[in-house]
Image (cartoon, rainbow, N blue to C red; front, side, top):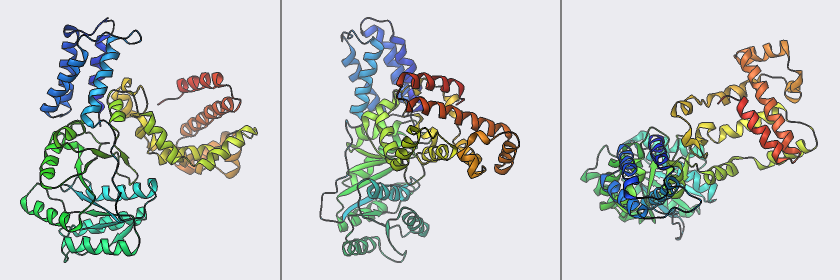
Amino acid sequence: MFDNLTDRLSGTLKNLKGKGKLTESNIKDTLREVRMALLEADVALLVVTDFIENVKQGALGKKVQSSLNPGQALVKLVQSELVQVMGEANQELNLKTNPPAIVLMAGLQGVGKTTTVAKLGRWLKETKKKKVGVVSTDVYRPAAIKQLQTLAEETELVFFDSDTSQKPVDIAVNAIDAAKKQFLDVVIVDTAGRLHIDDEMMDEIKALHAAINPIETLFVVDSMTGQDAANTAKAFNDALPLTGIVLTKADGDARGGAALSIRHITGKPIKFIGMGEKTDALEPFYPERIASRILGMGDMLSLIEEIEQSVDKKKAEKLARKVRKGKGFDFNDFKDQLLQMEKMGGVSAMLDKLPGMGNVSQETKEKINDKELSRQIAVINSMTLQERRYPDLIKGNRKKRIAAGCGQELQDVNRMLKQHKMMQKMIKRFSKGNSANMMRGLKNNMRGMRM
């Protein structure tokens, strides 16, 4: 989401290298560039003005610590101000009430509200171990009810049926009553969206809110609408007692203005951010982590949490024992690694969380194709069980047969074999416990592998 902003800020802040102190003269041009970068990212003018003034006041006269150069000092100030603008810390959902806790979802049509209901339900079920029910009160769009039912079945959530002949308030009240009988922990209520804000829509959602008294009222907003998202959120906040914001479509070509404007304008915390179309692509919003991503510093904490949730620990332990016994790393093991990476959204989903990615050109990032994972898995599936267990058997005619079996070229099979060899060498070094050897091997392998 923040690619353009990251590129602009990273380039701008590098210009201060070699200065001994941050002064008004040597930060003037830098702050002008930071201001332009924020405006181009569609951050609200009021937010940009306050942001620049706060960074300027923090920078003037500040002596650079011996371990920092002025560029690093200013980066630290910019990062701190980004965190302040976006809300300082993650604010969790408040579910402390007699079950079921009611969560009401509001927003305009087309922002991904119904999908977000399913995403949030899945997140609560898998992360917080809650029993979750969902219901749609969108009586104007029958497809919305069917869509939520399909998503609920896919994510194994309890779905409460509704009909376009019913009133939204009756639908929600009936669902909550049914949830109590089933001893559910949470009920998420989806509401009707409109293409724009109107009095009829606001009156309906006000009545619904009054009838069910939700503990959380979340406003779902498309991050691709920039600062307009913040203005729309403010209009909803004036009509409803919002408790938080969910930003959607943050994996798209969004400039980041919504994330940097919405808290400042509404005073409400961003609680979640949607990073893809799949139902597992919802993350809690951590301002300090997002600030690090914006400045190209990566977000290792989120990446580690994602790996811990996705990695099959039993398989990992089994592989570790196997390698320690000297049994090697075969194609069955390699396939497991590829499937785990695919489960995490592929390489592209992890890029902005890796430190230093701010220095990688946009052109290089765009060349990364996660379909390559599926092709590699197809190559392994085309092998016999014996070939998977004993990769050294794969030569000559076997390569041709494997390529024909998965509909790929011989060079694709050769590349796959080469990558397997590289990974095998790296794991051997790791199994010997020699970290220096492992790091040298890793660097050599990285030089040999194309992105």
